[in-house]
Image (cartoon, rainbow, N blue to C red; front, side):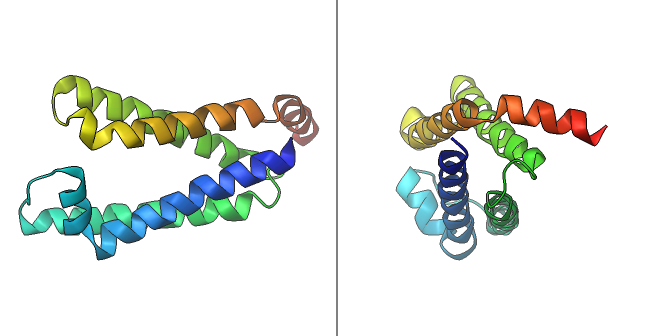
Length: 134
């Protein structure tokens, strides 16, 4: 179970690093592929800053995946990140900010990883470890 959790965390984080790099080095192409109209130049700055956040967070998730029980807060961070991404994507869709064609892939990918992370989360071991730290 722990090995599967490690793999899921690393794969999800690797995708996050790739997305972060795309936000930094190819934001115009990424926007065009998703069907977004070109925006003002400062949007590229915000995308680059967002890309750095993805890269840093994902790098720490990969490091934490080496020993998920010892780094249980990072496992929880990954779960929260995946769930909140789905919530924001669905919210943006419902508000009409985006179309399903623009966020559908993100919703599906993030939802699959959220379910996988929740299913593989070591509930019992995390509870025992929390008791030991007290």
